Length: 262
Image (tube, one colour):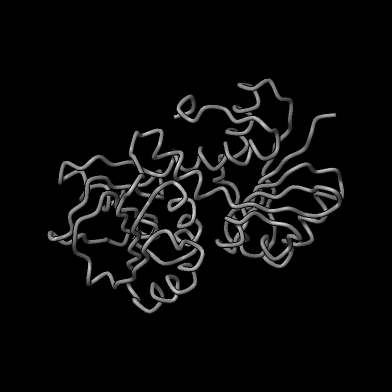
């Protein structure tokens, strides 16, 4: 009997997880079955319990359930604990375990681009869950300073206060979007501006060497502005593949090579 895996979310139609995991399985010689699983907003916990009750082996979690998945876990990784969100679930010794592979997926995507993270100054635009989920892996990979910029500065300041003890080896700072300035190695857009169509204006006195857009598949004013400056850019498909590979490795003990799928 094939091991059963799924990705759960609402909506779920857009998920590319099944095609990615089946491609990884074919590459590594592993047999599995992986499907999309829609959950009503008030039925997430029951759907997860039902999946594992019926011999489910592992589950990925996408919006809007990552925080609720964290609350379900009896054991979780350090990066999930810091992110306060889980995107990868599995049952071990009768207990639900959780991890967050988003940040490592971003790191692996940048490694595949040959963007070094050692001793870097990084600007994160946005102070939501996407930013929270990647700070710890970025610091683990070598970032020495991360500035979190948000339209509401207080939200960025609160996130810095919440995370600074988890990454004492790096300097975390907060600012408002109207205070963007300075020189950075990498700027990462973790806002939904590209998906919502809102224009994100990068001031001329903000200097950077690389630009990464976490979203993918839609035109991005952030990427357009970076390209106009002649700066190397990338969109979030590499991060998507990277986080999926990390989850695959947790479940199967083997990880395919990211560059094979870009």
